[in-house]
Image (cartoon, rainbow, N blue to C red; front, side, top):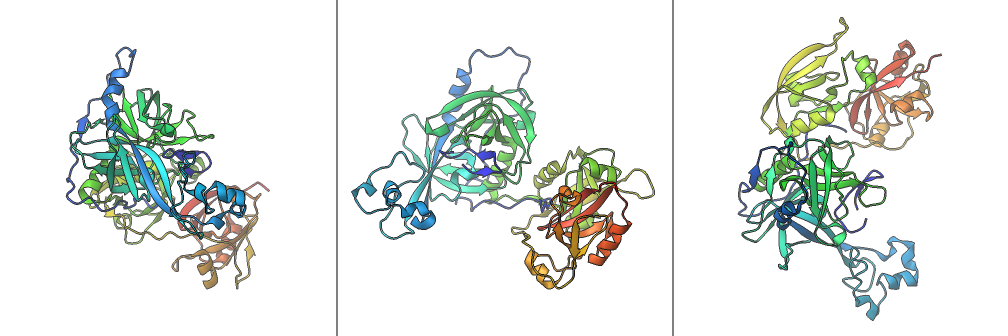
Length: 525
């Protein structure tokens, strides 16, 4: 199972921010002759919530089950016998079928994920790696929604419709890794499409059913409630706005259906939080509103295009809210503005806080990123900003209009590295105790991949037990500002740190391609 962090994993197989406010262009070429719009069944009406509880969901399951399919994906991979020292052991070589002999060609059903050797002889032979997932039929002529990680890298994808029907070969119309959505197409007619509804109508406490093929045991239905909506921040995919449910979701459920008590599709099951690899009552589904938008773009254009504002953003913490004199922690703090971007043209500055888009409240940076990404390029959006006024005790409100651009297909991803030698002498700062800085020389720029136009003080060392380290400062970072005053070199950083008083110090720093604000809580002397 693919995992994000230590506990969050996708659920497709048997087995177990440089935050540019923009999106990623994902997907593949659309199938030749594909319809420009999927003819889905759609019901917008919300659920009636004042009716008595059902005694059975059998009618709902009977309605939905024909729309949920099993997806088998096969990928040809090369694997070297020398990838592990275990394969030097003759026993392991025979066990995994690397030695010549008749036993190598025997089926190994107990190892479905590894597959069996395609050839004999030297290392580097090919194997068939198989994965299992689920999908949902959304049109009668064969369009199917699933997860990108179910079919990612597959050389062959087959769909099982169940009910004794023959498996069908599916074409991957396109994928969108940033949302983990994939659109497949099978050559079939008169299928049973699911009915889609408006996932924005979901409320915490609504009963939902999850359908899929967990662990390959066959189609399975589990029941739970909507535990939360709008979940994110797990790092599973770029755009997270998950429906959380306690309906059991297990490996093999990925791409399956999450439906309401009327049997209408509200989400596509995607991931779980688990310490064991199985369900622990915390599952996530991509809202169907997001999945449908991705599907429509893939079918019509062959790719997903998202709006691009061109700002780096971060959440507003209590410390940042106090230092920027903000009334609360709502909104998204702008940490950087891209040159010649829609944000720059609109007059947005770093340090601004975006609190509204077209009259809709921005709750946090993730919410803003989603809102912009779901707005088409060339759209004009009205933004409400809060900007610090040094002469007043509270920020001023500004309203600007920005015309969104289209996210470039490729973005520069800068990553830092370890410490290297430097020609200048490192300097220990005063107030930023336990932080050593130096000037940025050409060797340092190559070592840490620092942009040529970036000026500041390069952090050489940060004591692990210091306030600066706790605040997030690391070796390889570049300090750009101290208490909102620009830093051009190491000497200026030292001078400004001497002027800073004990207490909170606001830094603006570059770190591995991301510019962000951070707060260092200095201990009292």
